[in-house]
Image: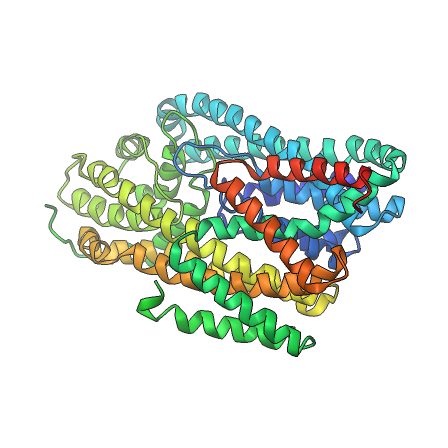
Length: 253
Length: 263
């Protein structure tokens, strides 16, 4: 439980970066996955889980007063749960990732709903703004901002703790009872998950010229890999160079 | 129009304002949105310009009005407000010019930030980071470069704007609006869109090539199945079906196929 406490505290601090402090991208699944993986002694799995989840919700933009589900929390909880399932119950990587993600998505949705409540609470705090400014000056305003941060931290911490603590124990008990065909099905979903991630990006750049570029580069890369299957890094490097050059070619956009 | 005054604010004051701007949304609320964060960010200026406590309170209360913009682009507004408020303080004026400027600038800057940072720069840098991790597979050393590349490439324009924006805004004052008018966010967005399309095509080729044989033994058929799945997801997303629903739907279909003996 001590490990869960500290993971939840760190996860809650990193999740503040999603909207409340800085937005340095420390809260993104790719980064949280690496940090949680390192802390749980399996950085390689943490990185892969983070990469799988990073692109999934990129199309959801926090514009204006719209509060989306907090998928940075989904990413952190998925990484923590999946590594725990692998370490404690010896489950396969793909299976634990899909199971953990299935359990973690409601945490992100709940976090978004609680976020709305926290913002309403912040409206009450804002109501004290003028009076606080009169009484305590700039220091008082700093205190009100700190109160907002504390509320945000507590929201993140409680959700992390519930999901990585009691729910992880329940999942560990439940997972071995899952029938074999379901195991096989979840394992297959793992291999399909990157297609969902790439579909999200495809939707972001969706327009006629982009389809031509994507199809052309896809065919080129696939054929090159067919000929030199061991040269994936070099081919990816070539893709980056091509992308950087095409960016400046007016006809491409 | 406020005359451009001699600038006397210290480097430390402007840096403190830039660093405080990272907390702009600490107490984001539905009533006046980022107002508390803005008042907190501008506090070093208030302390530098106020001659007595009454002035400080008056100043602070003026900046508690409604405010909402992109959290990175706020730096430009903060810089402009610093210059305008400094000029007003020197003329011993307490008019609400700064607030009118804030209201005028926050909308266009929010649109600029959303277009450049959220819609294009974040997907482009994230795709690059994810690509590195996918390629490295289970090797920690190159894989760790994924999050590092993502953070560094995203942070250079982010930190450059959020810290440099305060100084530029202060130096140029409201003239910066003319510079911003010349700046076309769609110009950057279109270029980044091409870069994303190329990297996406490349990653799609690499991932389908490497994972196609896991599902079926024939590589070409496996690639075809993965591409068909991608297109189904894409059209579902275009129809407004959320990622979470697609994930749970895929799990249910996979369970059905597993019970039917497909895999």
